[in-house]
Image (spheres, rainbow, N blue to C red):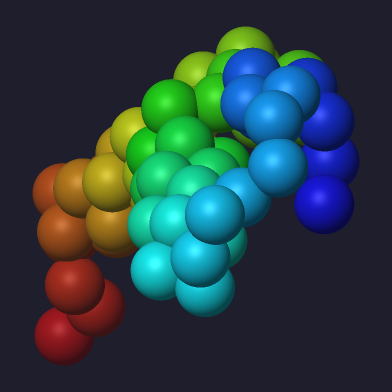
Length: 61
């Protein structure tokens, strides 16, 4: 797991704590982290812009 997202520096007390922390990290990774290759925008924003651009292009007849 990458560590550029803030991770608690304490032991987890249960599997549920680990699952919650993992879900939070995945949410951050997919929705909030800035990705340099994508122009410093989060992956989800890049994907939304990509599909919006596809929908704006005229369809060939």
